[in-house]
Image (cartoon, rainbow, N blue to C red):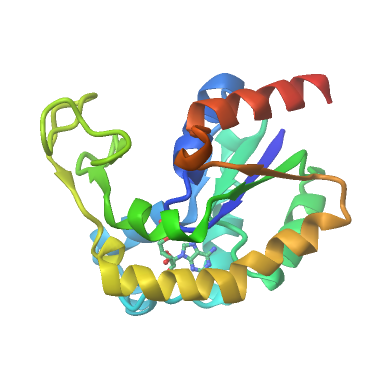
Length: 221
Ligand code: AMP
C-alpha cells in the first residue's frame, strides 16, 4: 500500500500518518525528518539542505529526490509506505510516479488535508515536538498540549519548537506551499487517487476523525 500525505505545513500530515502507520503496519517516511537527520549528523548533505530549510524554502528537487529514492530502496517499505512531505512540487510527483513504477508499486491514495489558511499559521507557531529522535511525538500547545508543560507524555523528554515554525519563517513556508505544493493536488486530480478532506478545528474534525475516514475508505476500496 502506498499512501501520500499532502497539505500545508502543520496541517496534521505527520499526525495522521502516524495513525495510518500503526493501523497498516507500514512506515511513515517524512522528508523533513530525513533532512533534519542529515543536519544533526553534521553532514555535507545536511549543510546544503539547511541553507534552504532555515529560510523556509524548498530544498532543490535533485537532492530531495536522491534522498527519497534511496530511502525507498530500504527493506522496510516492501509491504508499503506512507510519504509525509514528499512530493512537494509537481516535478517531484512526476519523478515519484516513475520511481514507484520501477518498484512495481502504485499510489493507493493521496490524502490532501484541507485546513483553512487562517488556522494554518496558528497551528505552525503553536506546534511543539519531542526532542527524543526515537519518539518525535508532535504536540500543539493549544489543540493538543502535553500533560506537563514542555514535557513529552510518551517518553518524558523535553519538547522544542522547530526554528522554521517561528512566525517569520512560517509565513514564508506558507507562501512556498501555495505556490509550489498546492498545485500537486491538481496533478493527482485526474488519477482517481486524490482524497481531499477537511482537517479543521472550526468543524471539530481533527486527526482522529480524518484518519478513521481514510482507513474506512481504504478498507472499502
Ligand atoms: P517538514 O518537516 O515536512 O515541514 O519539512 C521541513 C523543511 O524541509 C521544508 O520547509 C523544506 O525546506 C524541506 N523539505 C521537506 N520535504 C521537502 C520536499 N519534498 N522538497 C523540498 N524540500 C523539502
